[in-house]
Length: 89
Image 1 (cartoon, rainbow, N blue to C red):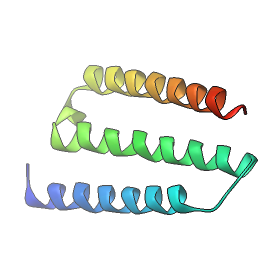
Image 2 (cartoon, rainbow, N blue to C red):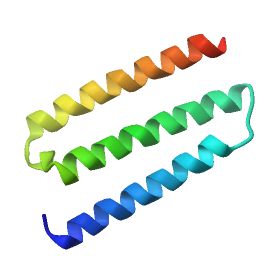
Image 3 (cartoon, rainbow, N blue to C red):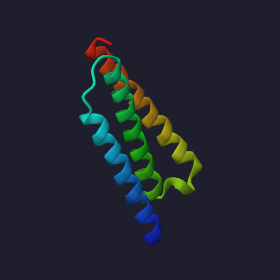
C-alpha cells in the first residue's frame, strides 16, 4: 500500500473517530439520543468500510466489498434495533 493511501485512510479514521467521540459525549436525551445513536452507528460503519477497503485492500474486489457492506449494514441495523428495544424508543 502506498504511503499516501495509508495516510489518507488514517486521516479519515481519525476524523470519523473524532465525530464518534463528539456524538457519544453529547448531552442529549429523548429523540436526540436516538439520532446520536444513529450517528455513532453510521460512523462505525464508515470506519469499518475504510478499514476493509483501504487496509485490507478489498477496494479491488467488487464482490467482497459488497458482501462486507451488506454484512456490516445488517449488523448495524440489528444493533440499532437492540438499542431501540433496550431504551424503550
